[in-house]
Length: 160
Image (cartoon, rainbow, N blue to C red; front, top):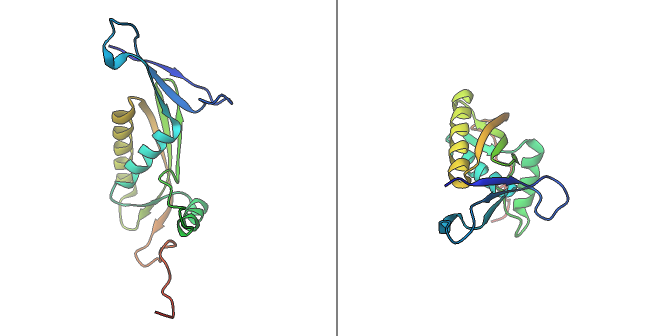
């Protein structure tokens, strides 16, 4: 049982930015292969973002401006944080590539953390989507110091 994966280009079609897993059809084909499964780029980005955040030593994802906008978005009622902040993906016919912008905790080995992030992201994306992850590029944008105040934490007010 092999799946054929068809690519959807980044054009203006409504199904742009998705990967489609297509199985065999007909009455003789196994039930699990009948039909087509489509995986959007956003799904792969969410999986990669969650997998990266699970790694000890990762403080946050996103470059400075993305984190600033994320902090403002969290303060707006209903805004919430974005799991895909700092994550970019390219999804092709059978493969995916992931780019991550990360902030690491001070004192951790950046080389080790990057290796763990790559392993966790590749494992999660391949297991959940069936796509082969060809690369996970990591840019370390900042180091979080223990005494730095969080942008997203509310400041103590003078009045209680």
